[in-house]
Length: 180
Image (cartoon, rainbow, N blue to C red; front, side):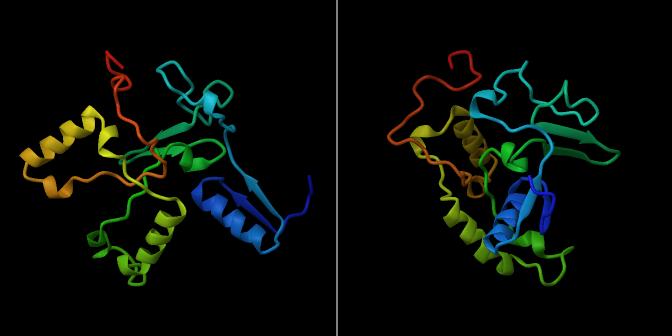
């Protein structure tokens, strides 16, 4: 490995990976540093005893992909591993509500300013919502509850960066349920 780099990017999540990619596209020699391990699909935690949690004080023993930090007035959930936050974001890609920019942000940061980038991300990541045949019972119950509370207009399918298998329906029950 070379000892000289034009740029060193710390973190291999969305921001770090895209930054490193853009710098490399411009011909720069880039080093990306990430804490935690590289995860293969077969190693993803799936059940209670699997490696979910990461602890910076004992990474050899607790080397999962979720690093929880608790402070006086805030709890932070962050990923630990190659891929950063993309390990734990569950493929969800949301746009911030335009009302959130009404106060507390510099005047230059507006929803209108960000909207073209939201659209670009949606296109590049091929964001889609799950087809109705793949909606879980939990989703259906939450949608029904929102309607009964008078908030049906605020309930929507979440855009995901996954490609649903078509045709496909949930016939084997839900994960983590008694019959799934």
